[in-house]
Length: 89
Length: 396
Image 1 (cartoon, rainbow over the protein chains, first blue to last red):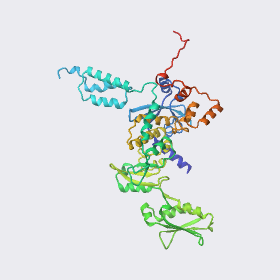
Image 2 (cartoon, helix red, strand yellow; image 1 turned 90 degrees about the vertical axis):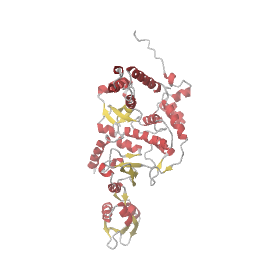
Image 3 (tube, rainbow over the protein chains, first blue to last red; image 1 turned 180 degrees about the vertical axis):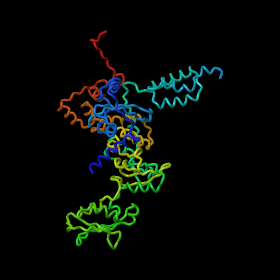
Image 4 (tube, one colour; image 1 turned 30 degrees about the vertical axis):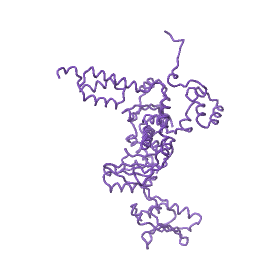
C-alpha cells in the first residue's frame, strides 16, 4: 500500500511538467544566477519564492538555494521570463 | 519598380525589426509588427521612421518608475466590482450544475479558500475516447463515485437473525452500471465478522449475516458504514455530466480530485482543469496556481461584463503567489507579510497589531505608503520615491 502510493506520486510528478497550466521551469547555473541577481541589483530572497516541496520544483529536482527560470506564456507579452528563488518548505 | 534598391527586401525586414526591437518589446507585438509590415513595400527611410515611432509608443506606454501600480490595480478592480450583481447562482453552460459566480466567487478567489463552494473539474479525454459517446459514458461511470447508498432502495436491520438486509434499486444499478455481484464483493471486503450473500428469493436482496449478536448501540454506525461503502469511482467526484464541446466529449464533474484523475489512462492529463486553486497548487505547483488564478478572476469579471485589464489581475496574482504558496489578500495573508506594524494596524485589528509590535519591540522604518501617511511624511510614490545619495568619501 505504502509503496504503491509512492510509486503513484512519482508517476504524477513526471506528468506535472507536461500539464498546460505549468510553464517551463529550469534550474539556473550558479554563474547565470549571479548574473541575474546583478542585473536586477537584488538579493536572492527578494525574488519571488518557490518552495522546495512544490511539485514543479520536485519534478525538475530543484534544491533550496537554487534559482529557477520560469518561461510563462503570457496573454499580454507572448513569452515572459521570471525567476523564483527556491526556499525550504 | 525602377529603383528597387531603395526598398527594403521583405525577406530581411523581419530580421531588421527583430534585431532592433527584440528584448525590449513583447514577442507578440514584434510578431504582429512583422506580419503587418510584410504587406507593404517600404523604403529604408520609412522603415526607420516606423521603428522609431514604435519605440516612442513603447516609451509612452511603459509604467514610469515610482508609479503606484498596486493602487491603480486596486481602484481598477474595486470600482467595477461594486457594480457586480450579488446574484450567486447561474446556470453557466450546463443546466444540471450550478456554479458560484459573481461577487461571491471573486471573494472566494481573493480569499484563497481551501475548497471553492462549487468545485468543478473538466476532464478532457485521450484521442481514443474523446469522439465516442459510448466510451465517454463508460469513463464517466468509472470515475463517478458510487456508494452503496446510491443504489439502495431500503435497508433493514433484523435482530432476530443477526442480519442486515439491503434491497437494491434495480433502475439505479442499471444507471450506474453496477452488478449485484459487485456490491456483494465490496461489502464482503468492508464488513468484518460477517458473511455477505445474495438472497435466494430476491436477486436484488443482499443479506449481511453477522457471526455475533448485533449490538443495538453500534448498529446505527454499522448501517452507516455499509451505506457509505464505495463500490467504484474516484473519491470526491460526486456527479459527472457529459458535455459536447466542438468535436469532442468533455466530462464535467462536480467535485475535484486532480491527483487521482491524472493517473487514469483515459484522461488527457495535460488538459484536465479544475477551479480549485489550492488543489492545483498542491498537485501542479505555484506557477500553475498563478495562471489559474488569473484565468478564474478574469472569467468572473468577464462573465459579468466588466472590462478590467488583465495586467491588474496579474499583479494581484503575483502578490498572492509571491511566497511560493497561495496567500489570501487580507490580514492573514498578504497583509501579514508586511514589515511595517503601522501599516498592519491601519488595515485591520488595530489594537492587537500595535500591542504585538510593542511587545516585540518592532521598528517601523516608515518606508511604505500607509505608515508615511500616518506620520505625515511624503508618500514614497512617483517623484517622492527618488532620494539623493551623497557619499563624501568617494574618490574622484
